[in-house]
Length: 248
Length: 257
Ligand SMILES: Nc1ncnc2c1ncn2[C@@H]1O[C@H](COP(=O)(O)OP(=O)(O)OP(=O)(O)O)[C@@H](O)[C@H]1O
Ligand SMILES: [Mg+2]
Image (cartoon, rainbow over all chains, first blue to last red; front, side, top):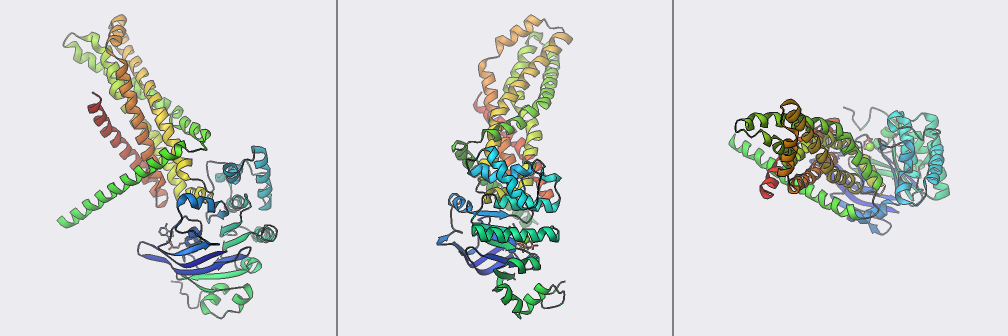
């Protein structure tokens, strides 16, 4: 279980996280929603130790991770897989090089076994025959899917996906939700997802949490959130321009 | 007015101290990780090829023309004392002690240093460095160590090349064009140039190799602000790298008489 307690983070004068409290259950799919620029990406970067908070703490089981030294944090990171919002593929490496990178760094598998795993993971995200292509030759959605394959290549215990379906067509997006549900069922993977894709969220989420103005303002199961009358949440889930949130 | 000026000066000084500190920290980390297994020889070779092999052409070009112009100029000067026979040693000594390492350093900083800063800067702003971290790979070990090692190993080799083509260029001008006796030219050169002179030059080039790659890695690594920031990183790494090469060259010259 991951427990985020009173997490605060500012960049200069700009307060981004202002006391986030959130519990992420083991083996469950937690979806974080919220408007663009509210700090969702910043929040999950804290879980990976890419950013350190100004205040607050994050517990992974009994381990407080925000105060951890870089070298100890690396042991923690081996339990995670992460997809960046912009995929963050290594542009000096082929697709296979990218997806196989964690295997090459952290396992004793030989090149043949690595490429087998790589092919299998790429197939799961609907990519076949792209192994030798360079990231620059891929479409936006293909990059995202290569990033997804790289994030899950080690079968990590906890997976963080930052907007996994942005840029994907609806069919592909649905097949990603199947991938998430399958791995959750078979491997008991814990998922933390950020997305603006409401149908996708409704299909997979065990818990939805809404980040607004630096705090988690509402959270609950899909049913609870659908029934929640909070006007900010309603406006967001229903995608209306009129409401308490102003679009300037 | 005055106050504003002083404040700006203070800010600049603060930034300077800050970045010097961070660079020292990066160097210390790199030194530690360089000896910590696993050592990735493939990455090191790749960088050596990038710094070394791909700089050969530009280094040969600069070296030979510098040797040629040195021969021409020193001939004009030495002729006034009737010492034309000293053209050979003048060219060889200047190349080995000063111009070989310094010109190599400046040229490779312009070529490889800027490219390194651009590459690492791009990796930073597109979150590739963050991606490395999330995959539990230390980015200093993975990215910075091979580059610094390549600099330390390849700069001396490139300097030897520069020295050599410079001497050959000087010979061409001195003997073929200006008609100095080839036996005298070579004999005098061997008489005057000592192993020490070459070692001095190579020692300098090792330091320059470290400076160039460390400065470039640092600027790339901490690049911010998109494509513009990456461009800024490349420019600053060339400017700072070149300045540090010249300053450290003076300091080393005054110590290693
Ligand atoms: N490294 C940084 N330095 C300064 N400000 C930052 C940094 N990273 C993020 N921010 C700021 O933090 C705020 C939240 O950014 P974040 O990327 O987390 O938004 P987000 O919720 O993921 O939005 P989106 O849905 O558009 O991806 C933004 O206003 C951004 O300007
Ligand atoms: Mg984001």
